[in-house]
Image (cartoon, rainbow, N blue to C red; front, top):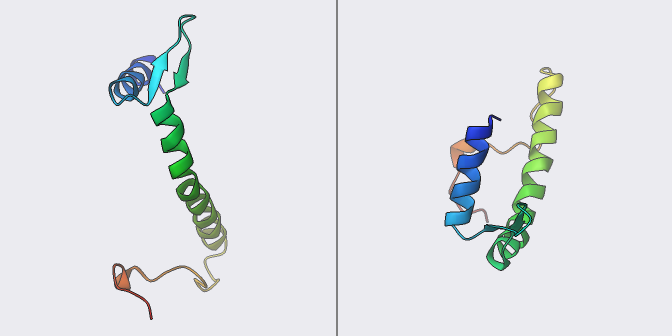
Length: 79
């Protein structure tokens, strides 16, 4: 990531009040940022699980997509 992109991301996080710059020039999460991290942690875990499953499937294309959801029924409630 380029330094200009990193700087822009930090500016956005500061504006969103998720991060603040400390007196020594480092960046730290605010209370809101810590709450967001806690709230997003299950989503991060879920995405890592699915990424691993999909990577395993793509490593062996002959393997049926067991456990990979069919996106054609996305948004429908399951019984």
